[in-house]
Each structure stands twice: as C-alpha cells, then as structure tokens.
Image (cartoon, rainbow, N blue to C red; front, side):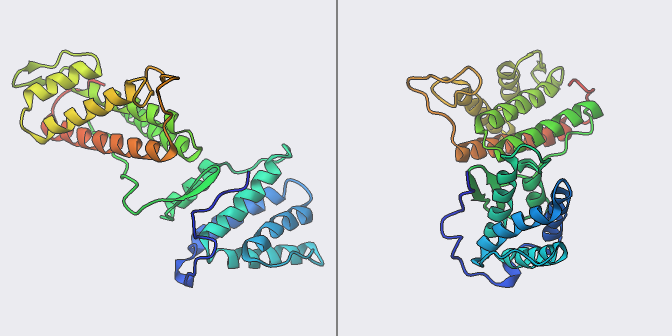
Length: 289
C-alpha cells in the first residue's frame, strides 16, 4: 500500500533550508546503493528513479547508460529531498514494490525511522501513514540508574528500543505492553529499600506502588506513583486499554496509533522520573533488580 502523507504536505511550499539535511540524504543514498547491487543495477536504478521522478512531478525516461541512470537518480533524489515527505514517500514506496518480489534484502521501517530520529527529522513512518512528530512528542530516553547492574540496564535500553520500533511498525498495543513491562520492572528496584515506614516488601507493581505512596505522602513522588497506578489500571482493564488482560471484544476499543504514542510517552516520562528519584533518594541502596 502506498505511503499516505500528512494532509497538505504534498503541495506545501518550503525553502531549501527546510529540506532533508545532507547527512540524512547521504544515508538514504547509501541504502539505495546497497539495494541496487543485489540485481540488475541499471534496472534497479531506473526503478528508484521512476519513484523519485513521480515525487517531483517529472516524467520518467530511461537513461542512456547505467552511469547516467545513477547520476540522474541522484539529481531527482536531491530535488525531492527539498520536501522531506515526498522524498520519504518515494523511497518507501520504491522499497515496498521491491519487497513484494521477495528476492531483495531491503531496509525495514525501523531502520528508516532510526535514521530520521538520529537526524532530528520530525517525521515517522507508521505504515500505511507518514506522520509528523511534534517537537515535544518524543520524551528523551532515560539512562538507567548507575545502581542497576549493566545487564539490567541493557535490558531496559533494548526494551525501550523495541517499543519505539513497534510504534514505527504500527503496532501500538504491543508497544504499550512493552512500556508497561518496563514500568513494572523499574518499580521492582524499590523492593527492599528502607523507608520511614519500614522496608518495602511488595513483589508486584501495585503492592510496591502502595508502599511508596504511604511513605511519601504529599510529595511529587506520591502524585507520580498515583498517576502511574491509574494508567496501569486503565491499560490493564479489558474495557480500558485492553493491554494486559485482553480486550473486551464487545465493549472494548483497540488502541489507535495516536493513543499508543500518547501512552508510551506518558509511561516513559514516569519511568524517567522514577529512575531519577531512586538514584536521588537511595544512592547507597544495593541493586535489587
């Protein structure tokens, strides 16, 4: 299915400064080079050229040689890069057309989005759509507390990346489920911590959350844990998010991509705060994760 662009982007007027950075253009150019060596190079260059010609409204004519096909393609790609949405539409659609043939090794959506994310391009491919990402929509990824073992820190980082990839691949429910797992796992770091009310004994999220709130009444930590608990309960309910205990097939509503992004960002902000609070309040506590 062709990529659907954000409303109005096909005819938007932009200055050259609003196009794709040279670095990201070069990365996509490199991806094309890795694809075209897998078969008839000239024919594959023409394949991509046809899509980029379409992106800028130019007629596609076969080049007189393989070398000229490469040169012409680079020119069309450079022109399309002035409008990032059209550039990404052309590249994605060209790859998907080849993917349908089942004989080429092609970059996946996660890699495309990683390139966009690493170069601060506020766009994300969420098939079948290309979506704009607001400037404040991406919550910075937290660094696990230094008190966590390196193995545990690596698990958290990998899970954060997995959630991001799932969102990019238009699997919001699975992405939120991954983030809930992170929230529950991070909460267990407080198990065994000594508080004014005693040592936290709970083994599961709700028990630990209750003990944390009891020991920190009236504080920001109290309020954040309350919000975490409410969101956790809503997402667990079959008639709420339907993530943890299944969805009520009669009365439940599946999570939309926009809701998935919202829930993931909310959970990530809570996780970031809990990590910081753990490090600040209990810097000498042993690793309990």
